[in-house]
Figure 1: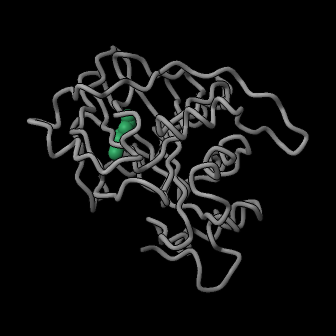
Figure 2: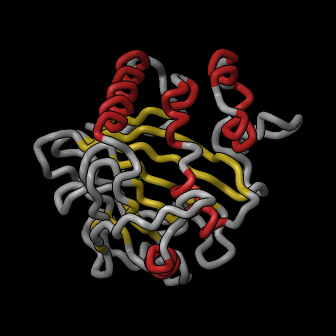
Length: 255
Ligand SMILES: O=C(O)CCC(=O)C(=O)O
């Protein structure tokens, strides 16, 4: 799917157009172009790579994908990544999926180098259909093309159809799948209940993105935001602290 045209600015902040809302509701994702400037893409990419270099010897608690630089919890490294928390247009999309009572769930970097990045189609064991509980936003630091875009089964967030278990091999293309196509600087608001998977980067340059996800408050955050370094907490805006649950005692803890 191609990027939708930029929405009208609203005096109360930019909001999704009716068409963007419909696409998000029916397909489970919508591409919002021009959220980041090229300079912001450069800065976020550089910081993500810097964090990877700084931490690459650190033992990891999760499965490492070959040829992929996965940087977990970017926010513990730099307040630069606060850029991915509060964007009003992106938040309007997230609220269209989850409603207003949300908090911040996770933020990770994912860079797939040429020849790598292929994942099995997955549903992350999430129930499908309403009410939705988590919503991802994918920040495209490089263009998402036919040669590297995330594969998705549009509409699969709405139905209990066992798309994945019916796959002979979830690594192979699914007949109902399509590629998310998005220009550099776009954000894809992405219902986390959608069946999807990373694709092999068949391009000749790295494909970088940031996953920045939200959840309804009954779902605990993936990271314990209370453990963020004090200097990071001190540098965040009050609206970010509220989204992280750090403005209230007893909140912000991980699942
Ligand atoms: O980066 C992508 O294209 C999607 C990655 C993904 O689906 C995942 O890591 O679960």
